[in-house]
Length: 287
Image (cartoon, rainbow, N blue to C red; front, side, top):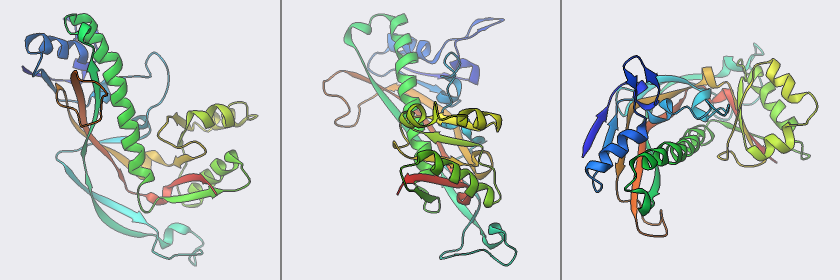
């Protein structure tokens, strides 16, 4: 069975004037009841946009740091500005950006997919299956999205690595904020590994309070390696390209996804990050 859900509110499970809007899991569970082997539900919005993981447990995800642009197709054309190759030193004006070069770029929106395997005992319990999809598949999809969007930036060839020496993680992070402002931007957000957040930032004097005063957004997730950080002017230097369509379906997973046979369900969204100003991101790494 193939079904379609329309409107961003369709994924929230909220109560409206006309009743309760089904969650993503409830829509899939209904389709699964009708056809367990071919259940498939399409959404005309991005599932991770509707699934607000931080609503009950305040915590930023990667997508929360970017401004969004609707992608009407698989390829989006845009502008870019970056350092000239082999550049060193400052131009006569003393401003780094006066040496930057303008250009264009084609950015490709791609599928991001996560998988779960339905426990056999759950298949006959529609409410429990719906909750399983809402609370496990959506969380797995959020993890896959964090990974993909983060790697879009750290993997960009013109995003500079900023090594820090002496084992001072905090000094490396603060140096990145300085470098961004020396480039004409504002470092208003960063991604860090939870290990560094709790072991290096929490309890480091007034640091978190100082960053909060400057309204710096901190996203902690495991897709940034321990000892590293991605610091940037996320709002100005990049855009989240959102394809605004998603699907949850019963499907055959890639080999090696699961250790045992069973019914697999995937959730797929279509998005990527277009980096316009790689000069306004720094990947902080140990020297």
